[in-house]
Length: 355
Image 1 (cartoon, one colour):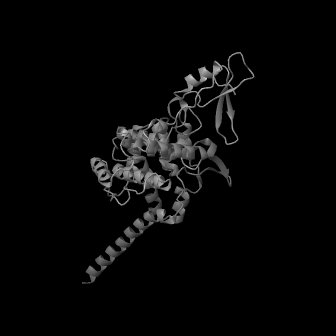
Image 2: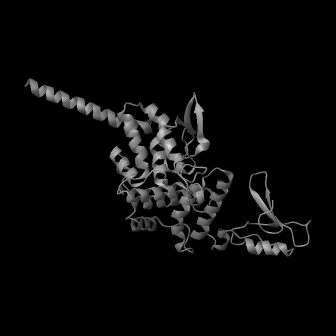
């Protein structure tokens, strides 16, 4: 298939991947293989060489430019391995992106030896003390990479294992209350992207990353009722099937521009990632004077409301797509404790009356 450039052919392989070949100018029967497509840095060089009838050399991998057995060599070799897994569908592109965001810190001094001493890793962790969760994530990412390197006999030990985490998990995201939602909607009116995003989060209980896919194609009719049916993007999630409530349907039809998803980015396209959607939603919260809240808190607030209304942990599982009962049990146990405490206090009042 031709793609914008004269003589350029894009051919689909049995694996589902694409390869590019070029017809030299004036030689329609000849086809020369090139090793990247439009948008790649090396595309112009390879394409022009092929149009002249020359066979271009393959683009070198990043690891081939690095000093052998250096930290840059190891990190880029690990990236190349993960990239192949992404192509095969066994690793998500989101995982690769997160690994790169963390491990790129190690290539600031690219010629350093690839096995970093434990003391140096602890120093790096301490340097990131202002963001302890990120510091621990870096150590964990290095540990996973070193496990991979040990399996391939690149190194003989894993210096990242056994380092104590410095992050102490708190109570997590703050649950939204009814008053918070009203304040958000007072700032962001019907027909706006923030209004649509909040409505989807509120009336489906979905995670923020599901805003990148949820749209009309997931709407269906079950037993005469309009419904939404989808499998959340989070790995291991169960299929969710819930009624398409009138407030959600109204909110998703109110925007002037409609597209493949309920919430659109610039140009009417779906949101690019859960991370970008989360950052965007946080800005909307700040605009409404709710900077202490987040998208995840909407889901958490819904779970607590469902528990307070008497929903069992299995009913909450069905609505929120939890695959394990213990996840929903967090909310039902909290409500049960409160109910038991109130009963206990009532008994205390009774005992006082008898004294």
